[in-house]
Amino acid sequence: MTITRVDVIITCPGRNFVTVKITTKDGLVGYGDATLNGRELAVASYLRDHLAPLLRERDESRIEDIWQYLYRGSYWRRGPVTMAAIAAVDMALWDIKAKRAQMPLYELLGGASRKGVRAYVHASGWDYEALKVAVEGYRTQGFTAVRVQTGVPGLGQIYGIAPAKAGEKYNYEPAKPAVNSLGEPCPVEEEWDSRAYLNFVPEIFDNLRRDFGSSLALLHDAHHRLTPIEAARLGKELEPYDLFWLEDATPGEDQEAFRLIRSHTTTPLATGEVFNTVFDYRTLISERLIDYVRSSVTHAGGITGIKKILSFAEIYGVKSGIHGPTDVSPVGMAAALHLDMTIHNFGIQEFMPHSEETLSVFRTSYTVADGYLHPGDTPGLGVDLDEELAAASPYTPAYLPTNRLEDGTVHDW
Ligand SMILES: [Mg+2]
Image (cartoon, rainbow, N blue to C red; front, top):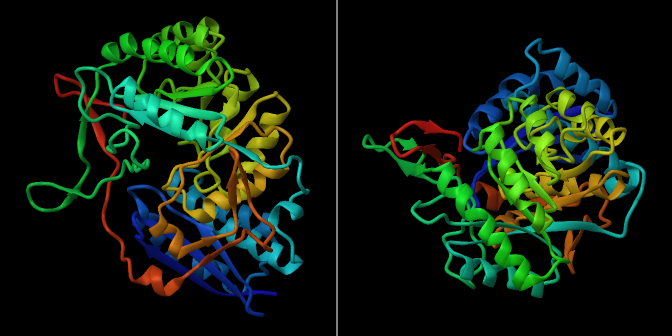
């Protein structure tokens, strides 16, 4: 069959999402997630203006060939905009292939390697007491792995802390619709102090292990903010608390920095949510400097792209920890779950539940029970898009925040 239509749907049911919809000559429809948080319209244009004309009349069954054609054929390779656009096309083609085969995608990818996908959720609080309430809530729901983030005394709004009060439903959404003095969209600015953070964090983990014992898996995200030697210190100081992983300790571009961190600590390390290709991991994986790869299906070239990363990781004993924030749409999340079911080197899946508003536009077949996710057995990815509802929620500009130190210097966010 051939591709007859490529549509790009931009919608904001609670937050922005970009979705590609590919239609074949015999009427099959596939969806792909192209959401790049804070840069959504760049990917939409890439898809609409540059990829759609290349796809029409093409045989939709040749997924690897189309991936290579879009990746190598553009001359300008890699980068988040290019790879999110390719990812969306790739997901949509896999969705169509599995629908044609009348199988849930995980069956087509090799079948189930496990009964379900172990998920970790985000617990946060401005102080330890609020964090404790959030962790208890997730334990009650059956989750066995929790990413924990707290406020730092002396600092205002910082990464990963839900504005909700203790006990309220988790509603953390970092991209914010702020405006500057001209009324134009701009990022909000947050503040950061690595020394205050480093001096405070070990106490939080000490409290968590005292209150929750040793079995709960604890994860923590430093969000690219530390220098290599600061990251080494944090990893070393957190060793007694047996973290599942320490995530994004240093900025992502510097793969060699992990040699220093690794030589100082046995705390497991995870990175890669801003990476787009297997090349971004070459040093990290081949030198066994990390334990988990964190790319999302949406930002790393789709199922075809991330399978290249996961296969490379597998031979070095590095496991998956696929990125799953709310800015990965339910389509991108479904793609992750189908992969998670099949690969051998599955580690864990990040899970930030989407809002009711989002899930009214994207109708999903995946389920959550006792800390496990399952993609469901609907043919394809198992996500349908209500286009009428999507059109009723137009794009709303929103940016991820930026960070400054006390003296005004821009710092990694
Ligand atoms: Mg992260």
